[in-house]
Length: 68
Image 1 (cartoon, rainbow, N blue to C red):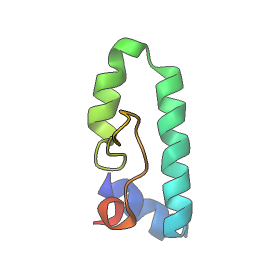
Image 2 (image 1 turned 90 degrees about the horizontal axis):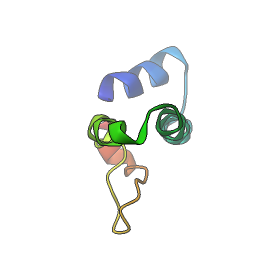
Image 3 (image 1 turned 60 degrees about the vertical axis):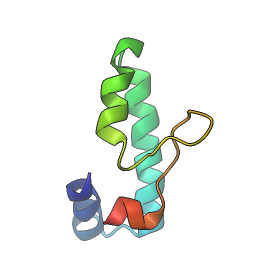
Image 4 (image 1 turned 180 degrees about the vertical axis):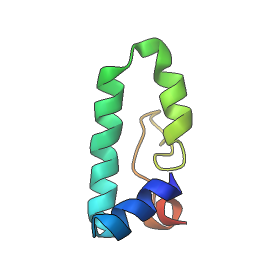
């Protein structure tokens, strides 16, 4: 995930806030395209960028988590 963040920052010139919003859009898009049985795989892939909150929903990571 860090590679993607780095590419978005360097190649697209995105700010950290823009990257966070883009990652949320990406997450929602992926969940809408894969069968529910693969949601665990998607969760595992995105876990560093979107740690689960107390309600079990995924939420954007704090900036230091997504950018480290």
